[in-house]
Amino acid sequence: METIRNTNEWMGATARAIGAYPAFALVPHPAFRMLGAWGRVTERSFARMVIKPDWEIPPIAGEDGQDHVVYVEPVLRRAFGDLIHFRVARRDPLPRKVLLVAPMSGHYATLMRSTVLSLLNDCELYVTDWHNARDIPVSEGKFDVEDYTRYLVDFIRHLGPDVNVIAVCQPAPLALVATAILAEEEPAAQPRTLTLIGGPVDPDAAATEVTDFGNRITMGELEHLAIQSVGFKYRGAGRMVYPGLAQLSSFITMNMQTHTRAFIEQIYAEARGTASEGDKHNKFYDEYLAVMDMTAEFYLSTVERIFKNLEIAQNRFTIDGRPVDIGKITDVAVMTVEGANDDISAPGQCVAALDLCTGVPDARKVQHLEPGAGHYGIFAGKSWRLNIRPLVLDFIDENAALPDSVKPRRKRRAGGAAADCGVNDPVHSDNVAV
Image 1 (cartoon, rainbow, N blue to C red):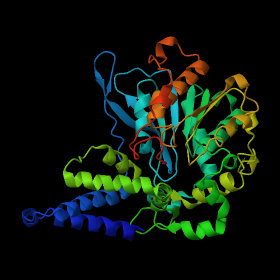
Image 2: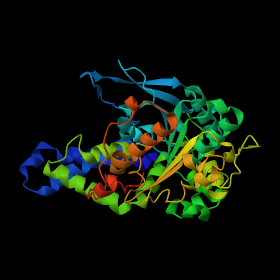
Image 3: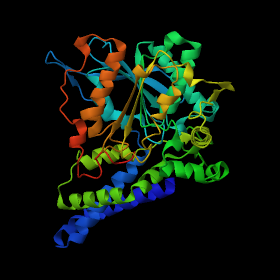
Image 4: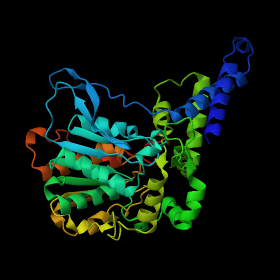
């Protein structure tokens, strides 16, 4: 897979060099311009696949007219992932403390950059920053769904009982389990609120291509077809992983027509000279194409225990053989958010968490179904910015007893994001599946 990626990057660089050769500028034929444009787009796209993006958080404008620089600082360091804090210089810590649990599903946590930017003005923000498995030595041992859950328990316990957890996509069911563990073992360390966004708590509640694939393939077939060994050029040489390039291939295949059209339009834009370094296409795909490997045990245990055996959906999940009862959660307000057009975690999969939380009063349960929103849109697109984010902040404030001085000041217009979701851009609309 790396050979194919490297070859395509080299072919793109070669085509870019040929198209830019000065002598060909004398030939009045568009083929050379198109060749150079194809080369620039191809080289950039395949080069991004092995580069971890930077957070690149710009300074925040403060109420006093000053710009406040944002520093990304590790709070807890672990072999497979860190807890990082976005510290805003010269700003007192805000009372609304939020832990944003980023998914470990093939992309880096920087995929949540726009989500982070939207929360920084109103929250003291912490994020889980998962590491690329190919860079983790074999000596660090395994990392499966149980280890992932222990990491979340440690992160929540470290941040204290005033933290509000927001779990996006893949970690939603495991964040629910981590909260249940704290509810039983250390009730004082539970988070105040738990917001689950587009996560597969009950994959069987609504069928998608993802759930169909999980039910169709056996674990033996999956291990044989998907798991590979890390090469010797990386620190994790010999570790068995599910390659990020394989995950990226499946993502693109699910929306092949959309992505194909986006790249064709970008090639024409490059040929016409209307493309730029910071245009929407480059900003989106520089992040979308940057992928990381997952440990084989994490990928396989996720498929087997969450999707096939439905251990969390049926409240049968265990840690080290000890059962975890989600019904033990009693003092945490729980909110679920789903997108009506989500083709990764379809409506019904995430809201199932509310039925599992039998110990939480109905008055402290909230569900929201966002019309017209796809998977990406419910945490990073227009639907998130215009409608879902204010709802989540209101939910946090209502259950955290925060003073009015820190509550959102923005007035939401009637109709929310539903009236503003009609974007024609197929790449950056809410319906792109990530």
